[in-house]
Length: 166
Ligand code: NI
Image (cartoon, rainbow, N blue to C red; front, side):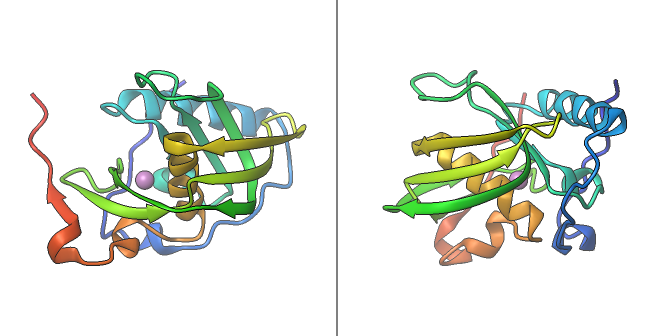
């Protein structure tokens, strides 16, 4: 396994639309393991998407189990994810491994229904809410070349410089 290099804004590869995964093979599972290790290497990261390491395929990982008071489904490998239902909306603060110096306030659906494959090609379906639903929406955006920066209502009032990590 390996920690992969994370692309950062404004790398143009972060604006690309990723292609669906068609082969669920050992190479895919090895990549997912590397992507997972890369996410765990990021400070406080709860998700990562394959385009963030330059692989333009529809693969994301979300794991909110390390956050306090956050209902979650544990470690989710989501291949070819599709959000099929959205309900409600809320504003919340987001960060991104590809935008290391800033956080921002973004409007997201409060509850979503999600269909995806796992790394073996098995179909999965999730009902997600709150912070975990937000994390999935953020990661799925990466597959369509969208960053949270693209969803700020106002860069002037909704973008915040991060305090440096110690
Ligand atoms: Ni991100």
